[in-house]
Image 1 (cartoon, rainbow, N blue to C red):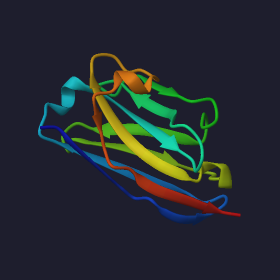
Image 2 (cartoon, rainbow, N blue to C red):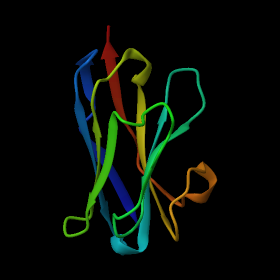
Image 3 (cartoon, helix red, strand yellow):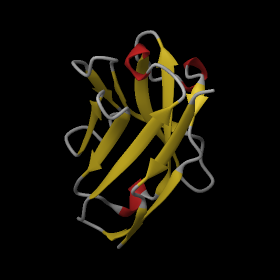
Image 4 (cartoon, rainbow, N blue to C red):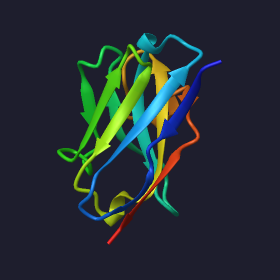
Length: 123
């Protein structure tokens, strides 16, 4: 059974940075494209960033381009999301997700999900 465990969320002031981590166990990490999604209060879950299994290709949602960076360490079975220049609109629960095959921005294409880690950005 594949398990994803996110960490690194918390409270940060606007303009600050956070790095989220997602540790994956129970599967073959190098078989998975990985992604981060987020869900703000009262809103639908939305795509944030994705990365190919090898880490050579990345893809970002328009609202985070240039400020967020997704990366992975296949030796540690971990994917990261570095978030810089945070603003209050980034307040959300951030979810890690994985799928076999190419990366995607579609929620429905991801088979594996973590429980989420909350991020709050204060103004």
